[in-house]
Length: 349
Image (cartoon, rainbow, N blue to C red; front, side, top):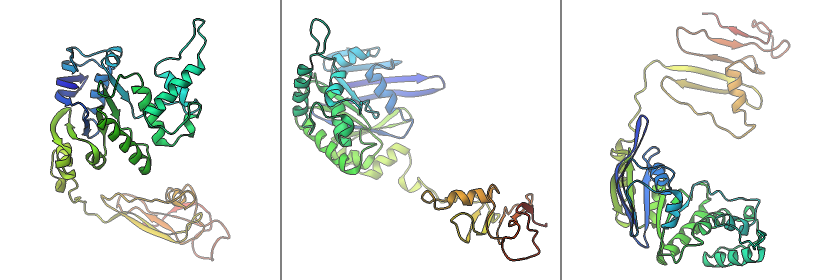
């Protein structure tokens, strides 16, 4: 159905695709995976006619394009696209969204034939098994059905399900898990009916669970095409990254030098008596729900918000830096030798 031979594309300072070969067979779901920057989006845009390739050949059925193809040519030869941003209009009805993909039926005076539009939409909804009515607002549909509306809009004028290629660019990214399963079940039905699909994904486990073959891009090159039922996750990860899974996350080599930041007995906002260290070479996460006090702790560390209790200090453990403490406001806390000024004062060296 779809064959790419030696497809290449360069931009100033980078080679996005280099001699990529790829084929999508009839009735096949073919996954294309790779890290960010591997060339997946560039390949899709070349197929859609957004970019012209620098070299290579695209063949769709018996049509051959040596210098790329235009958006109208892509549609004419049966290449249909559903992008990660579905471009459905949630405030409009299902009928409106379907009609936007092909144009509204009109009479000789240019008036929309709404009855004809609704009849066509009903046929499309039945064909793609979408549980909705033509007048239903798309915003009222569940996420998987919104994706199905986008797919139906793309394929509505295709003659049969074995005459074109549907390109899906990460369609499950924004879907809840339950809706992902519904969409995958629908794609399997399409494939069984003869529909060819190129499925772009970043989720390796998801792709291997239902596709027929998977091709891997790395740094603009196709490094392998595997039969998905025989492939495993670690094998695909190694092809994507270029190194064994065991070497993806080597043990960090942290510099010596102890803590770079020490926080002791912080009480500020809703926080009570919090202490922690930030060692040299380490990233320490501070997380919590809104109102938990994480922001107040940071404000206190940077002295933008004075704490309530006098027993508090942040000490950057670097010899060239001065340590600080924040004195309580006048009248706060027990009497002590600390001046009650409410200001941040350097600790004695």
